[in-house]
Image: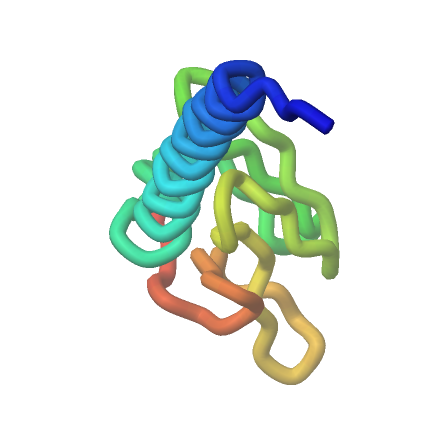
Length: 107
C-alpha cells in the first residue's frame, strides 16, 4: 500500500501553523490577564457620597457608577469599590482588590 507523504506533510504543516497561532493567542491573553490583575491600578474619582444613606457616585473609565450599601461593585480585573463601616455606620469608601482593602477613596 502506498501512502502519499506529501499529503501528510502538508497536513502536518497546517496543524503546526494552527498550533502556533493558538499558542500566540494564549500567550497574549495570559499576559493581558496578568497585567490587568497584578500591574494595572484603576483611576477612581469620587463625584458625591452620602454616608448616612449609603449612596455614592464615583467616576471610572469616564462612566459614573452608583454605589449602594454593603455591596462590592467590581470595576475591572480583581478591583472593586465598597462602603466601609465602623460599628455599623458607613464612614469611608474602600478600593478593594480580591475583596481586600487596598486604598481609601476621598471626595
